[in-house]
Image (tube, rainbow, N blue to C red):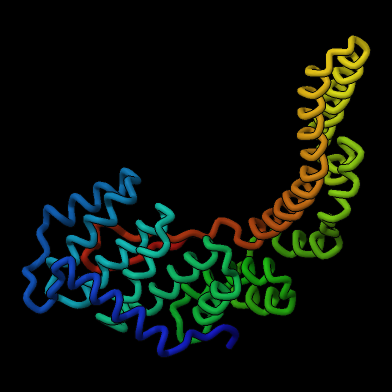
Length: 300
C-alpha cells in the first residue's frame, strides 16, 4: 500500500537508536524505577510548552524505567516534544526505539510518524501512515483522526480518489469539508512561470496572484528608481546613476522573482484553506497525569 520502508534500512535505524541510547547509559534491564520527581518535572515542562527541555526529561525518565511499556511511553513523549520543537530526527530516533521495546504502541507510533512526515512535507510517507491507521482494526478515535489527516495529505498529492475514500472513514466529517473540496476542484492554481513573465512589467506579477499591495509597492519603487536615474543623468552625476541603477536592477529583478513567489504563495494558501476545512478541529494530545501509562485525548 503506497510507500513501504525497506527492512534493512529499518534495522539499521533501530540499531543506531539502540547504540545512541547505550552511549547515553540506557540499560533497561538494570534500570531502577522511574523517579516521580523526574516524570513530574517532565510533565511540568510539557505544560509550560518548553518542548526541548521536556524531551530531555522524558528521555531521562525512560532510562529509569524497568517496564518496557512504560519506558516506551516516556520515549514516545520525548518524540512528541521533539516534534513540537521541530527536532524531527531526534523524534524519529525515539520512535524507532519505542518500536524496538514494545509493539503495544504501534497506533501511537504511526500517529506521530504521520505528523512528523507531514511537518516535513513528505506527504507520501504521511499518507502511508494515515491510511494504515484507518484500517478497521484500529481504535475509532485513531481512525477518525487519520481519515481527516490522510485526506489532507492526499490533497497535497492531488490524489482526489483517495481524499474521498479516506473521508468515508469519518462518521461525522467537518460540515464545510465537501463544499471546500468542490470549490477547490473548480478553482485553478496560478502558474509561477506566468507570474514571473508578468513580473517583467513591475507589479503585474504580484497582481496576477492577487497581491495588489505588493504590486503597487513594486510599481512605485521601480518608478522612483527610474526617476532617480533620469535626474542624476540630467545633472551628469554618473556615480548617482550607477548607484541608483544598481538599486533599480535589484528592485526590477525582485519584481520578476516576486511574481513567481506570489504564484507559489497563492497556491499554498488555496491548498491550506481546503486542508483546514477537511481537517476541521481534529487534534490530539497526551493525557499527562496518566504517565507513565500513555493515553491520548482526541478532539474533533
